[in-house]
Length: 490
Image (cartoon, rainbow, N blue to C red; front, side, top):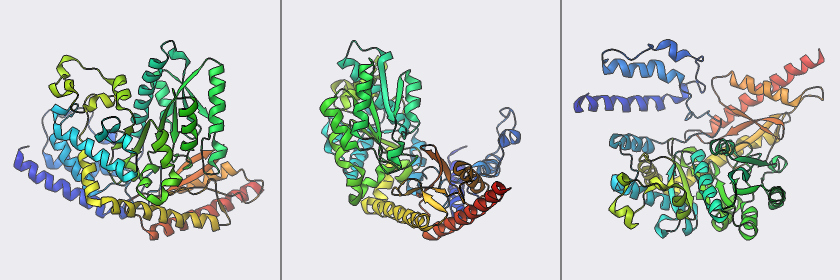
């Protein structure tokens, strides 16, 4: 493909992207294919000779798109929607054209410097303390791939820091602290690093809207230390996936830094951190605790931050602790500026060497939306969720399993009588919802209670979509409740 052929193919690709988004409402929200469909449709080996581009791109439309679940669909309420924007898509197109690994400043100065700047922009927009700004040269921000990578990177840094403070500590004694509400990445970090993970029980708290408190944390630390174990990092959460619960970061952070200062505090704000852009929510989100006590913070722009996947912001209070844990500099990576310490080499801030130019799309989105546009989007999502949550509150057949959390509602169908098993009823209810092609909700479990999640975040969702979704939920719930009630009687 030469330049002119690429120009023509590129115009066609943009047209296909536009057509995809223009027809989103007409698409099924759940991919209507069976496992293995694509292997059956594709040859079992690379073609011997190259194929013509029109045939290749046509197979994208014919074979690939039918197997894509459209997370940007207005009726996608599962997981946490990815609020993709055209500005971000263009940023990805342009950064892909540069194909630059950007592992150090000299590899492409703009890659490093733009990332440093837009992470500072974002930190200021979210109200993060200047301790987390790159411009202060003590802490700073870096773009990771996902919150999982952010957490793993934090654990690696925390382990290195703890072992430096306690040279006699064994790896076998180290314990990662999480909670029963923490994302699965905590357990995966333990698997990867061969470390123990202890999930502190907070499910009952989560049903009241909060997570970990200082009393639970102190008890666990004293138990483990008495048994010869060494907790070295706590992964706290602001906005859990299961329930939207918020750990009491101010409370647990103060405890750690005043009584157990060798324990690292990483705060996962992957989904809910974006709401920090709205000043009216900062107290509830515990911003003061983040600023006072957190060693590292993660916010995913690709969840509720209007940037297409992937783009996960991570901020650290001490860049030195991160670099000490991850810096390996063979001769072929040495540069004059790096040796002098006058530039940031982001290869020492994360696990891989090469890295994508993700800051370009974030820069485009932040400039296009501005703080006001970002706030308007977040407030609109919260308002739309309030509509759905109110329907649940006023319903006679549904109930909240946890308090509504910003743009997330956790609910379940109430049994018609005592003979009905509530979990079996709600599994059947969710299965019926999943048989549909016009809406996508995911399930969860909180303290042994099976429940359904309703998460608002797609940029094109309207109040009309919420009302239609409620109508489907209500009608399906009534039908399942009645049908299972008849079976129980029989």
